[in-house]
Length: 245
Image 1 (cartoon, rainbow, N blue to C red):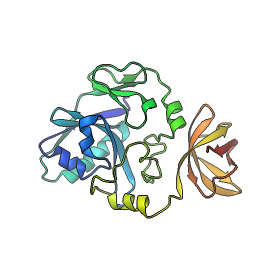
Image 2 (cartoon, one colour):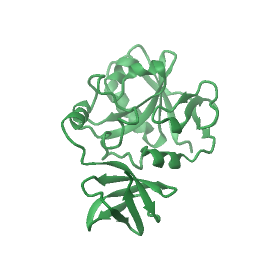
Image 3 (cartoon, one colour):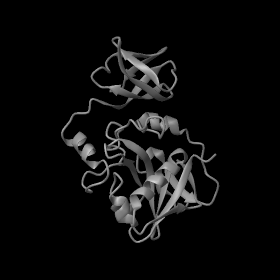
Image 4 (cartoon, rainbow, N blue to C red):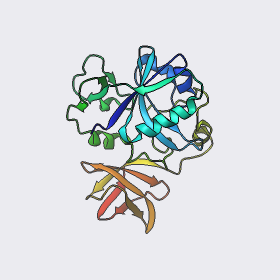
């Protein structure tokens, strides 16, 4: 089963419609892929995706598991806006080797390679994506990114997934307040892992809950941590976890 679905948004109000909904600036579509998310009014994550200019339309590349819910929410927000949301018939190809014609760099990090869209079968070049994600603390839909996530705790600022100058969007007030008026007390961090523990294993530090161990690869991992407790050697079941500095 494909793990991404590519939607096409078209119509004269597409850009303004998206600009009022997503975390990033739609104006950046003129220079390449845009990574963004849509949030609840309370500022929590609903879905993350890539946007690409496609003539007068915009392609939206989202995880298959989130596609139906996202399309439904976009249609709910659409009201009378002159925007059509439909299946594109395209598939995602991605890799880190030589990029095919029409491919664009993944905006989250240069090591995440390229993404391209065509009618060819969905696929990649065999890259170990988890190893790259873990090395650079890049969250994955449905693992590190859930409906309990806040995008700043999830590193979206470093991943070029949020723009603080673009103006209002759904959830913008909470996100801006977290940026300018509070110090983050929790968040995703890279950790060293000795041993193996299942994704979702609780991390204990000094006898207290300190977070959750998530994706792991090559002795490293991504963990969601209470930053005030993430000190020294921590335990996640039989694995020892240490915050990378």
